[in-house]
Length: 433
Ligand code: UDX
Image (cartoon, rainbow, N blue to C red):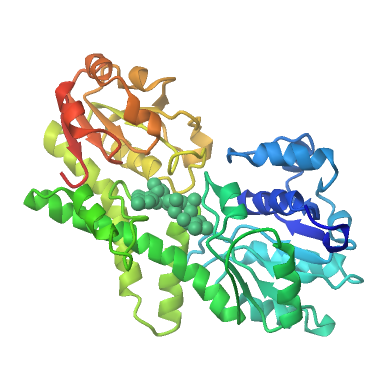
């Protein structure tokens, strides 16, 4: 806990994944944090300690810091911004039609800060992933008041975001105002992680490049998987061997259904957009996106090759979340696969331990959901594991097989032991086998 002298009054704009994790983390460090969101229902729930999505550890911290009044939630900009020493912008930056980032929410948040912080001149800290040039845009917007702007990109992974807050691989601060950067760095005292202070463009670019590189690694792994499957190699083993080289590293080298979520797909597209805008080579980024899209088709192709036609066939898809340990379905490869399967005329039955399938929440996908994996598999001609939930690795495979009509199991996330699946009577196919 901090000395009273270094506790700051902070504003966080945006009560989404990033905003809430930073708000709770900064409050836990001892700062007084007020969070603003335009969604009144969300604010009302948060005031009662209810977090609108699943993120391990976040709910407990929110409740704890609400109780000691270090956290405040409001949809009144004046209440949040008045007296704040810094304003953290944590609003979404979704993909725009041209592949770049839609910075509309960001610009609206800036206008709100401009209107409601006339007297306070807070340091503006950008957390949201932005394209290169946002820091300069904000500086120009606030030129009359000489407001300092610091780019401080987040590197949180869903499912381990609280851990990532307290144990960051790095804290990046980009600004042309050294005092403002020092003030933001001071906030994180007590957190153990290397701090990089740099110029704004470098900070902005390092975030986009980081996510684009993670996405490239996954598409690389998926390309190797396709080569392995044509030649009889073991892709998991190949990638494990690759990952032992410290210049490569083992992370994000799992072949599978491809990457999804709120960050990697949009940031890779934004990187391509930025490369094109900069007259730089963009093909690498474009290819990684195409490979990613093709992974879903690859699974459809495997099913079609084995079952001849998918029309009228019953396919069980286990997992809806874009990855394990989250209830997030944004850009979920599983939902994209389900759409493609429905397009072929297949009947799709699903299960997810955490996500409830709602037609309205996933782009009009109509499939039925069961309460357990075994129920979903009942009468199915084939089963696909689409999310790497650890519990799918512990399923009673014999029971699962018995409940099905067919014997095809496509393990698109590599969670099962191939020998165990075959011993249970499955025609087992993994990506890369
Ligand atoms: C990512 C970045 O990791 C994080 O640093 C950034 O701040 C936000 O974006 P997140 O979206 O939570 O985090 O997901 P991540 O763990 O990176 O996984 C993204 C997708 O890639 C998931 O769909 C996952 O299933 C897939 N994936 C991941 C693979 O297919 N193979 C892998 O080896 C790793």
